[in-house]
Amino acid sequence: MRESIPAADALLDKQVPVLDHGFVALTNYMGSDAEICRAARTCTSGEGTKTTSDDRALIRRLMRDNHTSPFEFVEMTFLCQMPIFVARQWIRHRTANVNEMSGRYGELPELTYVPEPERISWQNPVNKQGSGDAVPATIAEWFRDSLEGDMEAAFETYHEFLGRRDDGCLSMVERQDLIANGGISRELARINLPLSTYTKWKWKIDLHNLLHFLELRLHLYAQWEIRQYARAMAEMVQALCPLAWEAFEDFRLNAVTLSGSEILAIRAIVNGETNPVFTSRFSKSEFSAFLTKLADIGMQRFIPDATNARLSWESISTGVGGNPE
Ligand SMILES: Cc1cc2nc3c(=O)[nH]c(=O)nc-3n(C[C@H](O)[C@H](O)[C@H](O)COP(=O)(O)OP(=O)(O)OC[C@H]3O[C@@H](n4cnc5c(N)ncnc54)[C@H](O)[C@@H]3O)c2cc1C
Image 1 (cartoon, rainbow, N blue to C red):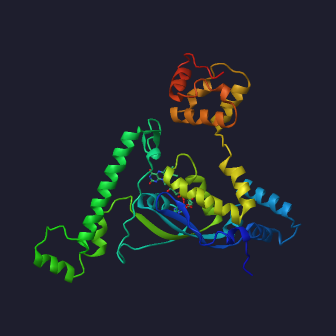
Image 2: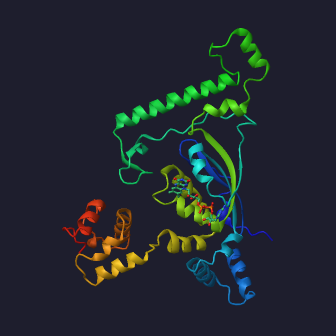
Image 3: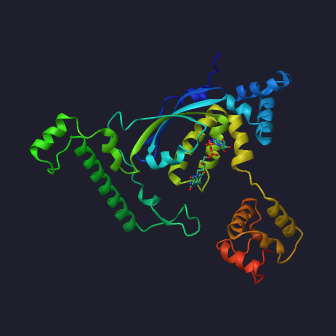
């Protein structure tokens, strides 16, 4: 019999707003923490005790040991509306089933994303894919005004192609011809529309792959916009499978993974080595990531200059000052 989880049922078909016109809604689900445990226990022919604390311990062990297949027994279906540039990042996650609205079949609604002023940032000087500090208010206003103007113009042209508007460029005979033939085909009329145009899809995925998606898309390195969708979905996962979510937070989201070189480096730091040679094994970006990990695990006092990892790397690797101790 299909299991019902009240906390998830309460969310069904409720559109959680994301960005200015987007949303995520949980439309269906199958499975639960208990189903993960039932799937895992088939390995042992259902032997063993089955209290909630046993379930918690089992799910934590599965997560810790990367015994992933039991998590695939939970499935979630979402209805999502997002700008096309977000959809392009999202669609890279190939382990989901997707059905997207068609701009060939129907007319696209005039919905475009305009970032809030505080979201508008300079290019990040270190992370080439990322945003840096917020821009001044006047520049944010200029950016938003320009975007809005361009988007409006693109949709005006789109509506002209479809025969809904008259820009006065065609003769009366040509315009009658356009209208009599239903306009330029929708599949071509749409191609001038911006990446900020909203699209919509149904997205179904199992919990194992959804957690993989969330691990990547909740990360600070993911673009802020897709992170907002990931956050909304994370809350839905938490409602459906609180034990799996807790284990995921502990063993994945909040975990710090150390490379072999990083373990050597931490050993050297703990053993009190001065000007350790190990730093030369790191590239600049690896060293910067290592400093972040030191901060994450509460060893920031070993970071010589937390605000300038590049300077620290150079000074340490050349042995000039900046000793991590
Ligand atoms: C911060 C960030 C920046 C990114 N930048 C870029 C970029 O600049 N350019 C770019 O192109 N992409 C970029 N990506 C996309 C990234 O490379 C992945 O394609 C995306 O995150 C999906 O991850 P995935 O393949 O693990 O997930 P899924 O597609 O869900 O796959 C899950 C797992 O299944 C396996 N798998 C699925 N399909 C296949 C297959 N066909 N062949 C082999 N194994 C398969 C793999 O083990 C994979 O890890 C970025 C992603 C992030 C998070």
